[in-house]
Image (cartoon, rainbow, N blue to C red):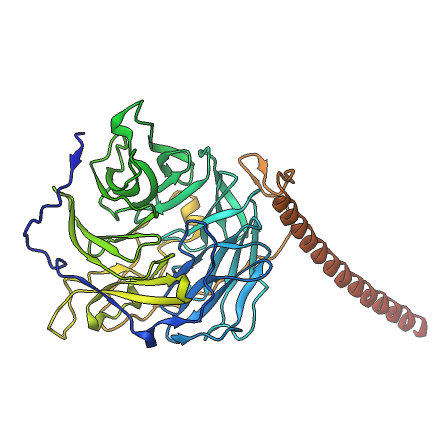
Length: 488
């Protein structure tokens, strides 16, 4: 496949998205007074859905994040309730795509936790998770929900492993162990049958997640080995059902790049283009409904956006949203939470650390008509799962259940998250007991192991007390039965 270079020379063509513009929210629409985390981990630290905005915050001892109703913008009180159950810093948070009140978090304390947020938001600090998941031997840096299946969560840790959790049983059911370094990014195709990962070992992989088999792989090599392998991948995203991938990374001259790939042939990118010479990580966001790709750099104030096509030039540069304030991370509102009446096709929530501010940025198609614009709002993935965890694990794949944004959206059924009964047991995946103690390598790992053991001791003490109470009750009942028998 011949390598094609994109041209920045403007081309005039018909496109309904060529005039899309970014509009920052006014002061009343921003969330102010938030001590946004200063952790340097390369993540967004922000997650949004139609009900809530969640962001990782600075805290003394352990890790925590704020959850704020998305319709209650304004200044946030310094003592606003937090989710604060982790013993280490929170590294990633993600809302369940099918249940608005369920959020997953992962942390430096090696755990993944599932939280249920009350209707209307938190009224006091929350420290008890509905589910605590232990299986990684080192800190957990990434989590992703399966896009079509309820109850399946993926987590990637600094032990170089990806675990697949079945939340209906509260245990890992699969382990993907093909990476030789830290996983930097995970992305699913539309039906969740394929998983793309970028890794610190300089590999880009397309994986069949149930088996863990690597279907395609690309490895960056230094310029002395081959000039054509100069793109070092940092982030990857599937382009819906186009059978394409987009990656962002750096060239051998350390300039930021974007590259387009065929998912069935990663030997060489279809196109690659240098963006600029800045050093911040470039985050890609893709909207499958409008076929628009957004590129936002960590520490930048601007967001570039393109239209993705199946023919040359493949990536058509549209415009750039500019802002003087740098972004630490960006949350993205799901489609059913957008303002359809304003022709809003995408919405970011931008973390501005220096000002303690979260600013909404709406991407709008300029239209004069006030009627529903069906051409820019096709049927989109909704909030109803296409299959259960057991169905997916048995090998079934289904496309997302689609919904229309016209006249709002009413969910056909209300789902509820049911946590499994907490039961201590071995967790054997691929022949390995994931709860088997691994000797700590650093003081931090030793402290995390200590806290985990303290939690386990606390749980065992509570269980022992309950059993003592039950034993006393049974002894009293037995004495009563004897006394009654003697009277007879």
